[in-house]
Length: 471
Image 1 (cartoon, rainbow, N blue to C red):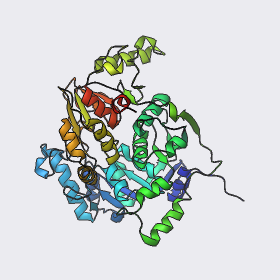
Image 2: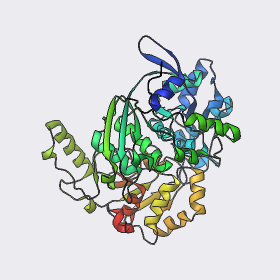
Image 3: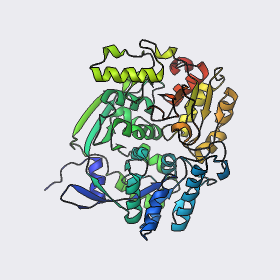
Image 4: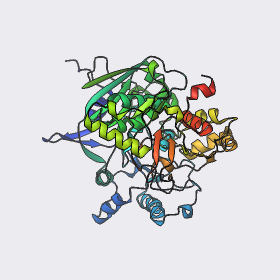
């Protein structure tokens, strides 16, 4: 009997399934386990139980959350607690023979930038990391998701993980994206449409001509923020764009192994006729550059929008929520987005710190100056990104315009490592989360693309980047 059509997700899930329990939990074999400097407690658990990592050759680590972006030396991490976390990662990985891309390593960087650019992340793998934005790696056709600290210890000890099988959602974007409309704008438009809980319990597969037209870096941004739509993971089927991106990377298959891998990877895309639990469609050509105004990525509008009025909310609960957000954000209903001034600009994070992101921002910054009173940072996502940007002279463009050029790390994405905004400061950020206090107590975060962030830096307010670059 012919096999029923299967989705990309189902193909990877079934290949990694070890066994199923009567309660619906499935034991999955983990193909790649990524670690960062927040994972020390998992090693402590193993040590107390007299256990060692089961498959150290499948584990890869890098410090990113707590490293200094002002310098590369361990002693430059000012907080001793953070310094200890970076030190512990180095000690634990060395003890167990785990490959660490530590400070000073030519491939060190944010874990979700390092994985794809080294070729550790590959189509068809099941990947986990103790970080919610592990969904990023799904851009290469992997099933990748974040896990908790207890689960990190379980994966270290067994290279397996218990999971309940999620539902599937396909989000189809057809049409052609307009000038200066990026993967960041696409995912913000999607979340604004389906809501921050719209994909809860689902793995999302992104499909359609607008998705296929995205570069690999745009797809990485898209999948990175799947978690902000409530999704368990986000995926894009591997295609020629994927294969061209991976070819020749240090941990990608080589020679005959590459040919064998390609043959397997070409079988991964969802079969014609495969069914999804939920289907969503959007017109990619209708998406414009986006900016968030509230404290959730779903609170996003095209740049020519205006702050909404809580009085027009659908119900009392939403009205009260909007009133709280506008009070925190210091915004007045009816204010055009283009009239809102910014204090800080942050270009970086696992969402938007890759070379394509920096090129887009530099194209806006070139020949311009950061507006008076605005402090702007550019933080490359990894050492290779930093080297490439400097080889292209992008760092000189940024410095010449008045941006600070920093060292790789998570930096201002999260307000826990010293790179924070002051209370009340309004931040144009290329990161992924904008909840209250995310970038420091009282910080007011607006999410947008790198080019839009650069436009805000040089104009001092949110601006339509298309007008600046003549698109």
